[in-house]
Length: 72
Image (tube, rainbow, N blue to C red; front, side, top):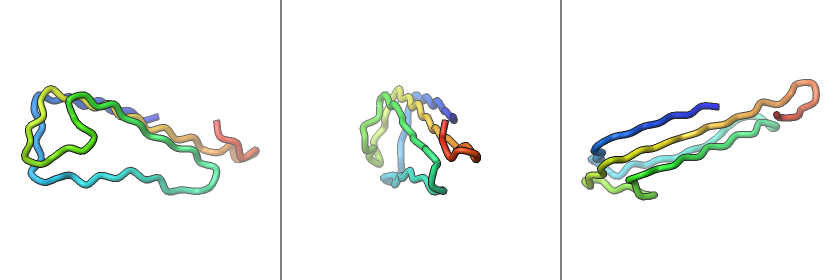
């Protein structure tokens, strides 16, 4: 598992950000990601100042057991 925590007093974009999360790999892999955001809307806008923000992000990936093909 990978996790990250970001906090900031002010955050501002010059241009609207383009974001995408995708997973590529072989059959049998299980992956998921999630995040919790405070102080940010689902879609941020450029030239708007966001204050007192936090973002927590998690990425989980399970590899298959080579003998059984199962993921744990």
